[in-house]
Amino acid sequence: MDSGILLTWIGALLIIGGVIYGAALALQKGRLSEVERDGRTRTVTSLEPQQGITPLSLRRHWPALALIIAGSILIIARAAF
Image 1 (cartoon, rainbow, N blue to C red):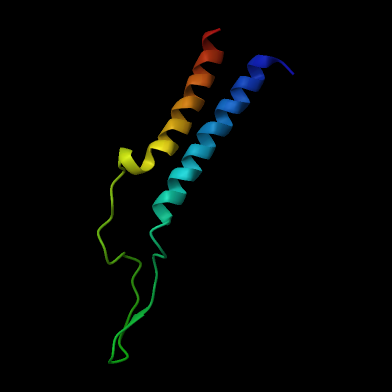
Image 2: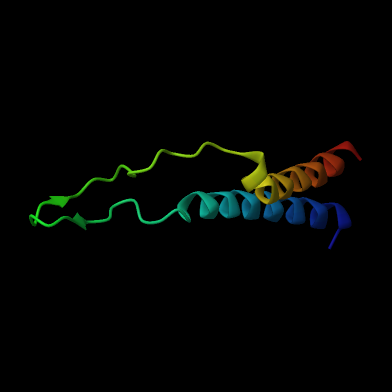
């Protein structure tokens, strides 16, 4: 197998892995549709999270961004040479 094709595949897998890892970090907060019951048997069924949505932060998502950047560098390096 040509080393250029191998670099392209590794770069693509790194990008896909970074996107999946970033999505897993976002979903790690908990289920989006949780049934909460209070003392009066009233249920709250909403897909909206009770806490605010946390934006993309470099402090928390840096591994995912590093994977995406490393994959992009490999693909660009292959295209340059």
